[in-house]
Image (cartoon, rainbow, N blue to C red; front, side):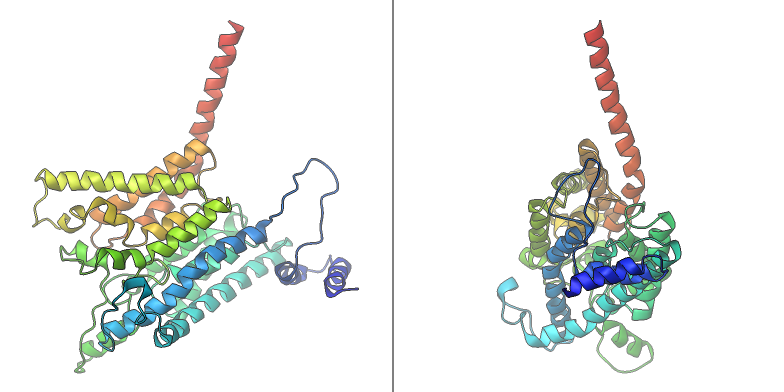
Length: 408
């Protein structure tokens, strides 16, 4: 008798124990469930929730690894220890063990805290409510470290994860019942509770915050700027980065959101595996381009002058908005969340378009926080059920008209 069968028998013998959900979570994580459908209508498929979650994680792993290299690269570049990498994405100056080492020791603790705190809370709720532990947090646990600044304090992340899991998901009934995307709920909590750690020109480069604190204390050290492209444009300054650097991701930003190239590949992988909705991704891009074109048109008309505080972002080439900030990452990995996004095909087009449209609108009109994708997705999460409701009602009315026409 194999280990898997022994564990299954142990689980069956202790099925009335309060601690069983904790054991089941580990058992299900290590093995495929033994349960099979015996009665009623059912569909045989090769995937399950765990496999779906693991597929999404696989799509994010390249962003995670790249984020580690980029964290070290931005650190060494800001402190003058290396020069700008030549050759872009394929530069040997970027893919060095030294860069990876700095990023690894900063990013891995974020991943560990995210998973340990989040899964611990999920298991506690499962024990309290006597239900199985769902695998939904597997993706959330990976998303969270990728959408925060590199030097986010671990205790701060732990508090935010606890808030996001409890308030953003468990109070609604757990995985599949939440209204808001849990990862974005965690990010929103961090932004509003600890704004100085989530915005500005110091938080995106490892060590820049410490350097700033030393300067404030009167010590004679060089100031380090880690300003993002959005931060520069919001202040009507030149971005200072080549287009290909933006596309490859050799720019400051949250851990996993900078490389549009790898995010694009991850999105194609999710579309190919039929997990991510291509309708939402495409319509989000269309919405962002439309909003960007509108702003470019306003600038071209002369309504906005260079003295306006909105000029920098408004005058940015409309398609550049797809390459900077967290737009690409949010569109691919969070706007497509099947629980919080629209479910109907027509609803997905409307939902995605508004996510992209509102993202760029917020980005331009809120220079204090020149990034709109987080707030846009959370806003549309709230309206997704309403969109689906009117789409369904519209379909019902069309069918009723056809029925009446046939009867007449």
